[in-house]
Amino acid sequence: MRSKNVATITTGAAPAAIGPYSQAIKAGNIIFTSGQIPIDPATGQVVAGGVARQTEQVMANLQAILAAAGAGLENVVKTTLYIKDMNDFDAINEVYSRYFTKEPPARSCVEVARLPKNVLVEIEAMAVVEDK
Image 1 (cartoon, rainbow, N blue to C red):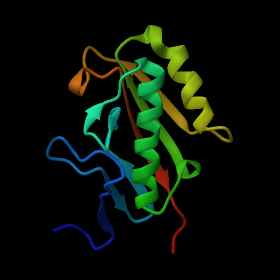
Image 2 (image 1 turned 135 degrees about the vertical axis):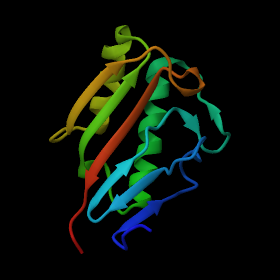
Image 3 (image 1 turned 90 degrees about the vertical axis):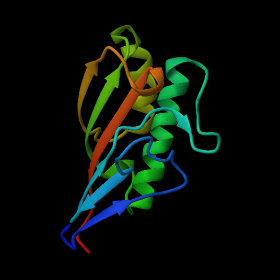
């Protein structure tokens, strides 16, 4: 049984989980998102257009989930980026930097052999909101 201070976050404005996990969990004033991949929630399909377009969709998905939890990108304190090809690092950074313009969060970036649905990028985030 989960603590009463732990809640599952779900929104139709982001892709549904494709496995046995939640879009996010809010534990007290901390929000943990699951890794988001570039699936368009309206179609359920991976977006076309390369790594920059995929990164934009991932960020939109993260924003939707954070909003459902009562937060925004300004509340993010840590992200982890999983990328298919480290040669895409600059293109991903260019998009990512448009979303975190002030006080960017701590971040890790890891090149991986493969991601779900063969996407090029996956990002997870941790955010902190004020106690109510």
